Length: 116
Image (cartoon, rainbow, N blue to C red; front, side):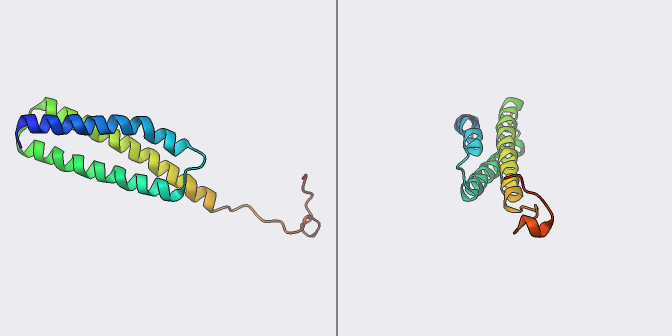
């Protein structure tokens, strides 16, 4: 791949990462987001990380200049940050799913007064 093609690719990838950085946190914070949606989003983010990782290796092997390498690393870091946020949201689903609080079937039988 020639330098101008790498530049075009990095511009497109950078634009995609910027748009994702604006949208993904809002999506993850939305109260109606589902586990399936976050899982699929995580998969898309992982694909972007893989694609950027491949491009970065290609750039390094071709001896690309530091400007291109720096741009690729910056974009890759942005995707990794989004992956971390998605993983945190997935962990919240796991915490919500596994409720370890005791279930009281009848407060009189348990010797506990329930205030509601």
